[in-house]
Picture 1 (cartoon, one colour):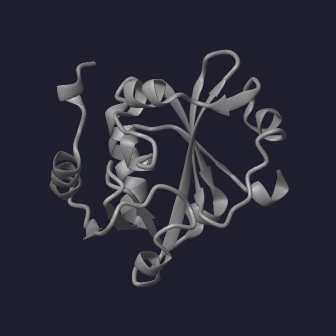
Picture 2 (cartoon, rainbow, N blue to C red):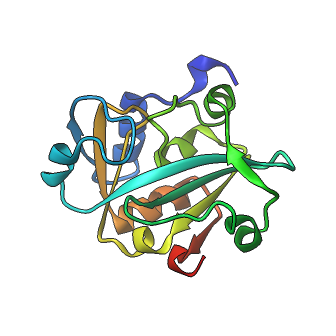
Length: 169
């Protein structure tokens, strides 16, 4: 896949609108990690997310999208999801797999993985949230989607995913 074939914020939002979804995007200062941008998040209703790009020792890539307050036990996770030992994926591997850079990891980047090389895990709390907020492939904006629209997004991509209650892990 060449760099030019990745979706950008603009082409992602065009695709979402073209599918009849109603994304609401707010531009803001760059936010690189959970805990930053609290003032921005205060004005945006819905669940805010943290997204982990991981690789297991078998070479399988994983994307975990969770509500920002969810605690994720990376040592216990392999047994739950059926992976090998997990570590964070490199910046290069992240870009090759999902077309985003660190700080911009998002479930919306699954649009850049048409071959479904990255397995997707969704936090139960996020799955149940009425509104979900993700970076639209760049960390200088946040896009809100109603839960129905987010699930339709995953359906449009024909994505399989697992919902996990991390409070049990």
